[in-house]
Image (spheres, rainbow, N blue to C red):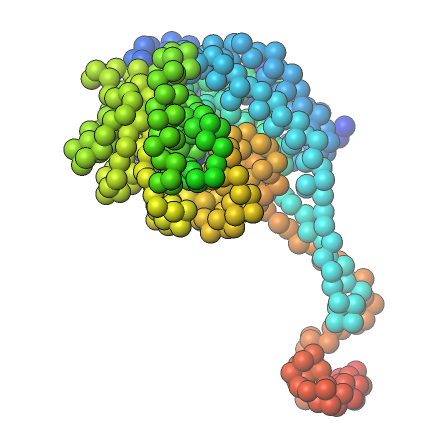
Length: 537
């Protein structure tokens, strides 16, 4: 849920298992179309853009490859993809260095957020996928449906279009690519045009493991994303801005293509007076400024109870002042996003907000310092819109009730953290929040837990990544009924006769539509009506 408007303003053992594996996931092009990195402006001569006119053929190739891939036994698919874990870990330093160059992330943050959790991700899905995709029986009443057995299986969607952002360009794609492939889908992956090298690296982790066409990379901007939808894919998984997500939703609705949309956040931390103040302050500072605030789960509002406000704010300001530029907090990734953050901060100050730490850098600089702002008014973009940058607004409230009401008033509802020693009270408050994820005495890291759903509501979208719930997006249920009855006809088949009408209404009374004696009478009536029905009357 993390690519902002700045990044995507317009986007839109069997014969089958022995199919030849490609040396690398294909990157289609009608190029060359040299790309420039929007973050730094340099020419990316090792990345070739995909022509939108090439997308239809790419999707057609993926569709042909998907049928063969889905026929590969699940265990074999898992054994192939399990090899991604070792490749990922072996290339940890390379990945961290690339993300430092292309996104501005600190090396430590890149390794901890985008390498190690994804090793767990591969383990989780490859170990559990057989059980999660196993057929499940449907209980059928033996008297009402004699001789009938039903089972539900989960079939792949087909061709999945995956459009992902620049803020976590390794972690976010893998959260969909791994389970999507394991479920038997083909994936056409369009990474952000801001981080094309990271996208290419993600695809390279699967080199030689998949049949040709099962994972394809489409490099480019919004026109490439729009072409993917027009090509008639079977599912669009999009992580990005609200504005772009709405455009995708409309385009997909016109084609009846299902979507998984993970969009923005305006996450709050609710700091209660009985909290461990030191832990709360440290957790809030990390939750606000990790990845330079460029995270849909960043803390962008802190509601702190009046009783501890002065001590909490003082500690947050002190901790923020200890952060080292370029070491603890990296530069922002794009100049456009930095300008959005600057405008929000300026507007808040004009409305009376007080800057307690940090402040906007010189115009054009991506080195935006971690900034703490004391603010009272909610009618400012800094509290209404997603900021996606290193600014921490602090609002003093009278009570937890006020904090919950203000949190729920946002049109976003992704994550909220509650900071308190009262766990029973915290769980009661959590049930009242709209947020899809609630953490108690921690914040923001659960997107890295492969068994935990990551989801929101409202303008945060309706997609789900991670956990078995994600398979509801990546697969579709198919119900298969087997009838072993030797009867020549079913009760409800033709002809419709007076005895059938009697059976229908007597069954309604017998199943609860009448009192005790009425049900007894209905059962007697049913026996007689069944006999007449068998005689065709």
